[in-house]
Image (tube, rainbow, N blue to C red):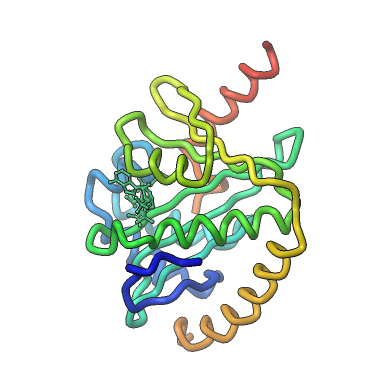
Length: 207
Ligand SMILES: CC(C)(COP(=O)(O)OP(=O)(O)OC[C@H]1O[C@@H](n2cnc3c(N)ncnc32)[C@H](O)[C@@H]1OP(=O)(O)O)[C@@H](O)C(=O)NCCC(=O)NCCS
């Protein structure tokens, strides 16, 4: 169930038609949030490029929409170079909308969606000082693995279950309708974290 404190918006799946909303959302993130989200300082030009491609990639994205504006986003990207079905997730919530359960709602949808696609492990990478993301990871029983200079949060969703498939399918249908009203109308992976994940996997492979 979503957080009772949630403001008046709603969650829905994002499609490539949401590029503009997604770019606007990312541009509203302040310097520190951008650093936390992308692992380094990023310019508006980078965000424009990212938003123009991110929603076309393999995977799924969800947003939190308030009065037609996207205020939070959760992305799940399949990692094709991984042996087992792994995917990487990333989250961003604008500061005025934090601590109200938005990211938790996005995470729940990401986990259901990953399960229904046969993903057995969801990886979330964050900087060591990012206590918010680490708290969020722990809330979903994610194990945190230190990966200097990054912290790697690993979520292991249980095996696919009928309930998560059902929830995902129902959301897809409802989101399609919502997207038509909302939309009127980047970079191949969630890099730069991808390099850290690859390094981590090759380290594991050598053990
Ligand atoms: C991390 C982030 C997505 C959290 O968004 P949010 O909507 O505020 O998170 P929620 O309100 O859903 O919180 C869910 C849980 O996360 C943890 N959490 C969230 N913010 C926290 C904070 N500042 N300190 C400690 N724990 C925190 C808590 O466990 C919380 O559960 P609770 O409310 O029951 O205590 C948001 O801070 C953000 O966008 N940061 C910048 C980008 C970023 O760091 N992305 C992560 C790397 S991909």
